[in-house]
Structures are given as C-alpha cells and as structure tokens.
Image (cartoon, rainbow, N blue to C red; front, side):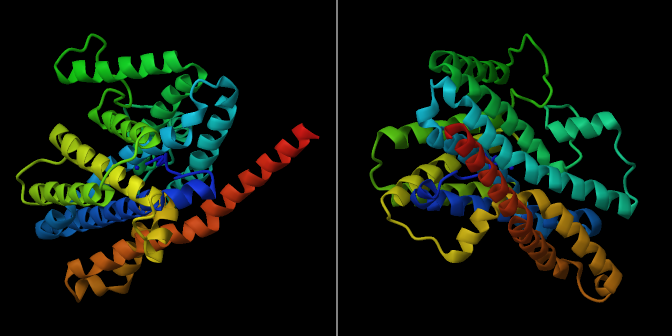
Length: 363
C-alpha cells in the first residue's frame, strides 16, 4: 500500500481530476491512517503482549486492500483515454515512475540509514539493495517492509502498459491473468509459485477497482451516497468480525470481504464526488494528499518515537498502551511532514522538467 500506487499511489495528475474525485483522495488518507494504527498496535503487542489493543486495530491491515482497489480504479479512470494509444505509453510510464519511485527511494534510504544507526541490521548486500531499489517481485521481503505492496503495483502497472499499447492485447493478458488466478485458487497450477505472488488474490482487487472505473466512465450511478454508506457499514462489519476472531482477515476470506466492500466504497465515493454530493473536511484532504508518504515513512517515525519513549523512561512509569497514540501520531504526522518536505517538492521538480521538455520539443 499503491502507490497507490498502495498509487497507484497518486490520485491524479491534474487538479481537475482531484476535484472530481475528492472522496477517493479522502479514502486513501483514511486507509493510510488505519495501516499506521495497525502497525503501532502490532509493535506494542509484540513487545508487551497487548491482545486487546491488537484486536481493536487488527483490521488496519485491510487498508492495503483498500489501496489496491483504489489503485485499479485510479489507473483506469485517469488513463482511460490512453488505452489503445501506444503514443501515450511514454507519458504513462513517466507519470507512474515519477509518482512512485523518487519518494520511495528516499524512504528506502532513511530505512537503511536508521537501521545501521540502530545497529539492528547488517548493511544489505549489493544484490538485495539493487532488488529493493528496482522494486522487482521477489520471494524475499524488501528492505523497506511496506514496499511489498509496491511490488504488486509494479506488476499491475506493467500489464496495464500492454493495454495502452494495444487494447485487444491488454484485455487478453488481463483476462489470462484473472483466469490464471482463479485456476490457482481452485487448486490448478501448472507453473508453480512465482516471485512476488502475482497469482495472489490481492491482485483481483486491482480488477475490482478497474471494474468500478469502467462503470463510472460509462454510466451514472444511482444513490451513490447509499452505496457508499452500505460499503462502509459492511467494511466495518468485516473489521468487527476479524477483531472478534469470527474470521481470519489475513486469509483469502479477508481479501474477498475487504476487497468487495472497498469496491462498493470506491464506487459510491467516486460517483458522489462527481455529482458534488459529499464534502470532505480539510483534515481528510491533508491526509489524502500525504497518504503515500504516510504509508512509506510510518516505520521511520514510529521507530524514532519509540526510541525517544524508551530513552525518556516513561515506559517504566505509565502503562505501555499509553504510548500507542504517540506512536500512531508520529507515523501520521511524520508522513505529512515528509509529503511537504520530500514528496511534493519532488513532484514539482518532475513537473517542471516535463514542462521544460515539452517546451523544447514544441520549439
């Protein structure tokens, strides 16, 4: 979570699209925040054993499911007119690369440097470093833990390239990919396990997002706020079911429940935004804009705050759970800060280079 990627991880490349889909941007902010809550609770549960806290926020991992559905939606919605237009492939690749990679590389560098300063990890081998820098699918965990979602995104982006090159070719490959996933889930797999799990059910969430985008592009959705509310209620119901151990949200059941309900939320939010039926508070707009940085840098700031917490000695005087809001706030606030200091300036720099290149070509 991709990119929006979980993203991808950028809602749009134009202000017009952002205004039209402000509800989707807010959804990304909420998704990034619940992931931070989940990781903060998991950190404390691992150290102190706090099952109640973990149970309350365990659903937060489903923010990734939300990211993947949004990613599928955004890529097709924004690049709908690029399908079957190979001349636009360079523009698509440039946008995806510049939106994802520069900020990710900064987060990766921070992670490696802090790991070395903390003495927790050996410096990665050149091969592991190169693999993580490239975000290629792998059977090994990336150096920046949350980047596993970006590996899924890269595969999806790559297949979408085929759709831009040739509509029939792209649709055929997407159809084969989806059919292959279904066969594997039915116990039929003649190829075996592949690096990066391109046959995981997570990938179906990209398809759900694309289906929503296609529908929005070609139809008007009735009662979008009701659809949004129903999707939100069902998503919360699945979260409660996981928190009470009625379901295991880490299994394929979780992917089906969270993915389908996220698709309803995206459908309702997108159409309600398009019809100007919802308003988004400023705080959610800020979270949405910074969601990629919040997702990427959360471990950096949670780790730094945790070290300060231990150094202060407060952990010995007050209940461990008291550090939870501080850890979560650090993850979110740190991400917003990095958006303003790193991600946004990088986007502006890339945009300026594009304008200069376009000017030179036209002149």
